[in-house]
Image 1 (cartoon, rainbow, N blue to C red):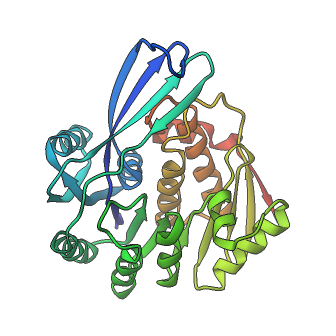
Image 2: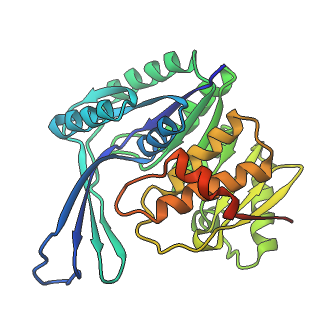
Length: 312
């Protein structure tokens, strides 16, 4: 049976990526190219999973004219969606790609305000979607009016229905979500250091911090470290991946591509080392693309052999 995945994006965005020859702070910048993409962590995960031929529904909150345009783009990409409409306007996030420096600068808006009745309508919708789901993906920033406990609430709903949750968040939303015991988490190294309150300079320190999360009831911990790869930790194994060399174009969506590949690997019952290879390849391929473009199944399949894995 093809597993169904529900992704949640509470603060979606229309990602506008502009390309300039050389970005001048305080000066005139003439735009060469413009690209518009539906964005937000859960939406990015859904786009990748759709390309991996996994049945996925993108859920969340949406508002205004920009929100309607975003949903039309999801329709065009054949991504199923179930968003609750709220008052206000969906944010636009501006990504400025500097061709000469090969660097992307991000300017992210706050997003709309959410009322208590909107949040309750969304909670009820997610509960319905979980009745047919195998995996729930949670991640991204929270709009104004949404409490830090929201991810924990949704994880509890999923746990009650036997649905595995993958949490990719930071700050208090991540801390509160951990208390509800998601199946898997994917902090990056900075987020893990924030959580532990201590520097994690050596591999032994990173692994130890990940194992502390296992003690909280997490089954899989994935710590992403950019160009240094990632560490995948279960109670039985620890695997470190080393990515192949690329010319980074944008890190936007790289972590989301990893999450999508993790879900795909879990659904396919891949061994940890193979899952780690796929997830690292997905993130690496996406990082090699401009703006908010994401990896494809063909690209990951072609490149996965280039990722090295080491048992620790």
